[in-house]
Image (cartoon, rainbow, N blue to C red; front, side, top):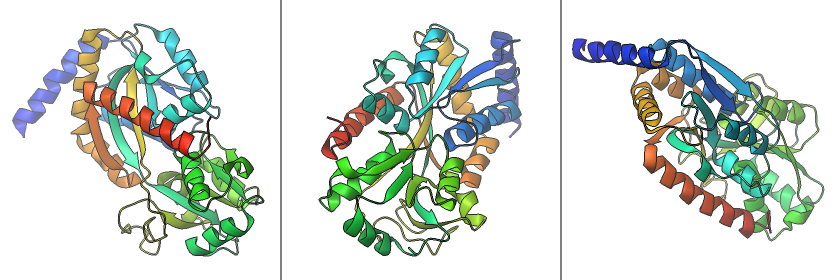
Length: 316
C-alpha cells in the first residue's frame, strides 16, 4: 500500500511539473446534465481527487443534436496537448448521419472509459405498462407514435430503427425527435410531447425515482439488482445488443509525449477508487481500453454503426 501511495505521489509531481498552471480543456458534445456531461465532470473530479489534475478543468459544453459543431471547434485545438473531447457511439453515429467531413481518424485516441445500459421508457401516466404493450402499439400505429432519444444516428435512433425494421415498418414514417440530454427527454415524456423514448439508463433513473416516468426494458444481459422489476431486451423480444459507451480523445496531432502522459493519467484514474466509485454509483460498466486499441475499436464501431444506419434505412 505504501509503495502504491508513493508511486502516485511521485507520478502526481511529474504531471504537475509538466502541466503546471494550465487547466485541462474538455470539449463535451452535449448540454450540461446529460450522461456525456456527467462522464466528463466525474472523470475530471476523479483525476483531481487523485492529484492527477492539479490545475483543474474547464468544460466546454457545445449543445446541439449531433457532434459536428463540437468536433469542428475541437479541430481548432490542433497540437494542443491539454485539450480533450468526450466521445461515444453517439458521436460516431451523429457524424455519419449528418455526413460530417470530420471523422475519429482525425483525433488522438486515448481511452474508452465506460459503457451505460440503454433503457426504454414511457410517462408514468401512460396507459402502456409493459414492453409487450408498447410493441403492440408500435405495430398497430407506428405512423402516429412520437419517439424521443439522443442525437440522430446514435444508439437511441438506431434502436428505434431496429424495432421498426423488425416489424417491417417504414422508418420514413417514424416520428423521431432528438434531445440533447436526458433531462429534456424526461420532461418531454412527462409533458406528453413524446409517447416513448430510448436513452441511457443513467439519464432516466432520476425520472423513474421521482415517479415521472416508467422504465419498460433495459439492454442489460440480465435483470439489474437496482431495477429487478424491469425485464431486459431479450425478455422483451428484442434480440439485439446496444452499448452506450463513452470515451475520451486528444486533440488532432497531439504530441507523442502528450499522448503518453494522458494515457498514464487515464490508466491511473481507471485503477483509482474515485472513478470506480463513480462507475458503481451510475450503474456504468468499466469498459476501459486505451491508446491504439481504442483507435482500432472506434474504426470497427464506425463500420458497424454505418451498416446499422443503412440497414434500418436511416441513412442512404
